[in-house]
Length: 78
Image 1 (spheres, rainbow, N blue to C red):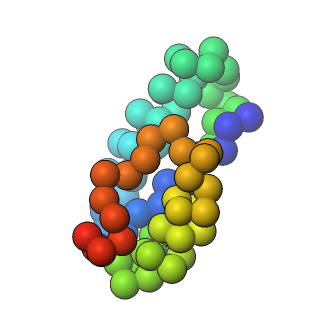
Image 2 (tube, rainbow, N blue to C red):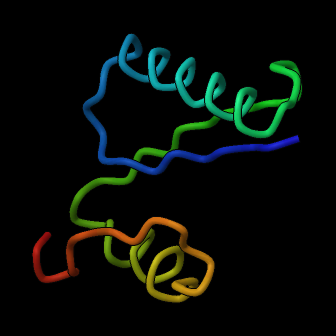
C-alpha cells in the first residue's frame, strides 16, 4: 500500500502532474509487484521561499538516513 507524496514548487500543470502520477504508479506496480489499486500519489506544492523551512530541513536534512536519492543541491543554492 505505498502512498507517495511528491513535494515540489508550484507551477506544474495538471497534465504534468497526471503524467508523473501515471509513471510513478507504473514503476511501483512493476518494481514491487503490487496492484495499481493499492498505490496512491499526492502532490504538495510549497513555494520556493518556504522550501528550506517546510521541506528541506524537516524532510531532507532531518531524515538524511532515510533518503535513497539525495538532492544534488544545498539550501544556499535555492
